[in-house]
Image 1 (cartoon, helix red, strand yellow):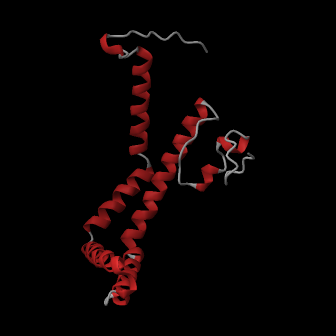
Image 2: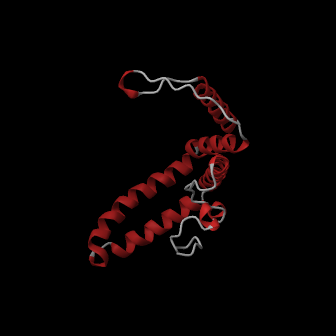
Image 3: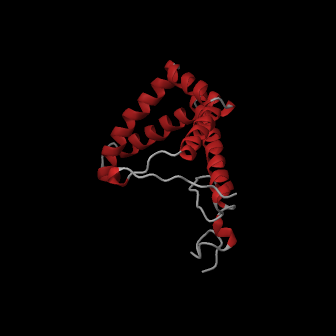
Length: 163
């Protein structure tokens, strides 16, 4: 499909918006709206609200933040600091309490689900343009499907390409 793109330049070398560019922007707004209305985004918002509105969860997070400040101070001196063992023990304990909090755990899961949706959309969009476009994701599911697996990067690294 060949399209004629009308490129008009104004002073300073900036391109004026063409009809095609405007159509793409409209479609991207539609995609953003669809993402915002998705079950993943709704769950993310609900979990965020529950986490921020839970008094007990917020107290745990604040307590962890305070011990983190002490932890950072103690780490400057290492095990020679007189409170080293106690601060490390409390930091681990408070971190575990925050990690095990039902609202924090639900929020983190919702956050990961939403990020996976965004990663998948990015991967599909990039693949529609070219197989050689690299999409940075922290999701190992997408790393196996990268352009590197077709012999594209030649880094010889963990992606499996041969140098």
